[in-house]
Image (cartoon, rainbow, N blue to C red; front, side, top):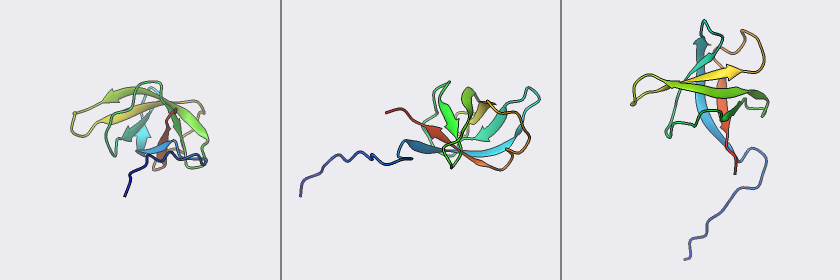
Length: 91
């Protein structure tokens, strides 16, 4: 049986779950606990489940084993706490 590399070409295929928003920092950035490696690059686009752009990765914080990601939001608001965010990966 041959192994074929398959690349998704459907909407949402370039999404990777980033994690849950814990809170908003004093500087206005969203603090997200990273759920799975690898650590995203800075300036990677962050979206919600509807592919609505939330912001960009601003900084990586905390210990290597369980890092946190700081996301600079594009839209002002306090309603992000508890939401699951995703990385929009370029192909």
